[in-house]
Image (tube, rainbow, N blue to C red):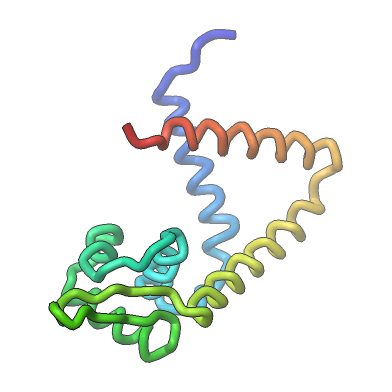
Length: 147
């Protein structure tokens, strides 16, 4: 098999990302404004609390704006914030059960949409799609590893 052009691989990768966004994520109503939802997503992928500074850097949102968004999420009961007694400027942000449920419900809806659309494929096409996803995800893990 001839070697693929790296630019063509990159184009297919971007086409996959865009296709998933355009055909699935874009069709789902977010339960919160995008910036708030992005914070919940970021927190749900971490095993430990994050600081406002870490969230700000991760999502590239200014700290002043982040403080406002965090306050709104806290008021909605989606996150909890705790300060150290020695430094009140330092706050740890954690996802609450309510916040986790917002994420779970969104992905449950996304899963249901995918399953409905998956029925358009024959069993053989579904099997090939599964194998392709498995191969794609394995490759993404390999190239995404930090050095």
